[in-house]
Image 1 (cartoon, rainbow, N blue to C red):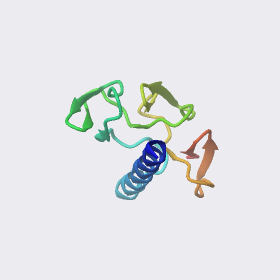
Image 2 (tube, rainbow, N blue to C red; image 1 turned 45 degrees about the vertical axis):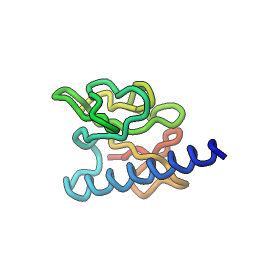
Image 3 (cartoon, rainbow, N blue to C red; image 1 turned 90 degrees about the vertical axis):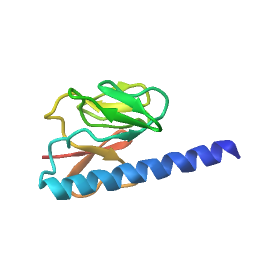
Image 4 (spheres, rainbow, N blue to C red; image 1 turned 30 degrees about the vertical axis):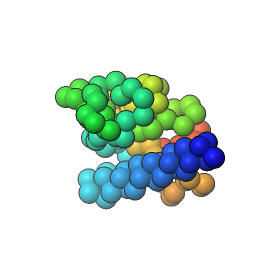
Length: 116
């Protein structure tokens, strides 16, 4: 029972990340480059460049976009604990894959990565 609730919680977190990323894309007008770093829900230790603040990891001045890791990180990202972190500020936006990737994205493991 506990495993099912953890899986459900993880799915909800991934859905929240997808919605946040879509909102950032719509607000910034760019679909290709990774968005600026944002606070992420803390899952164990914080990713590189982030520090703990309650239940969140908040980005420091040198942080890059991070998202929860499920399996291997997508192209252009590296693993940092339970997160995938953009390798550079020019890394393409990655979002968790929930079935087929949306138009303008390609599949990279458990993620969809912007084509442009």
